[in-house]
Length: 149
Image (tube, rainbow, N blue to C red; front, side):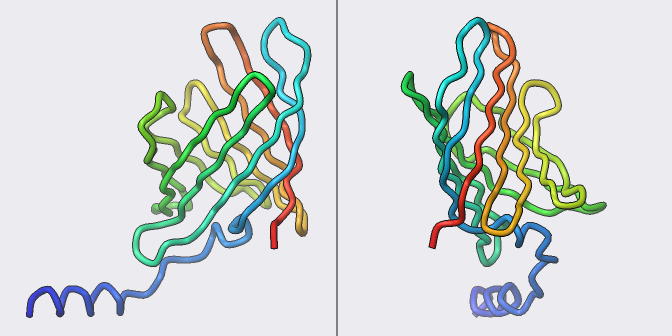
């Protein structure tokens, strides 16, 4: 009985404001990645941002070059003051927490030290940038992604 009441209360709770809505969807495209002391490489990325009913928005993706690729999965939740906080849901060495906010049409998320994801939507295109500070120096990537049907 208690389980039924709790489920009914959760389902009746209004959804939070849809701040991430413009960024949601499945995106795919390519660009370039610059690593320290190496020529720029072709970068291919796939992203998915999808709202879940009760827990937030899943931010999942894979970016790859001819040398290899990287997967990531974060669960994003909107917090007070317009902040967006993300929790790493993969078992990897990426930051366990990221946070940021939407400023105008740009969503920036980072860990405050090593890396940043940045997204800017223009119609059916998403300009995606990533940057990270690693042991070998700065890594920078940019790609133009298109909304998949």
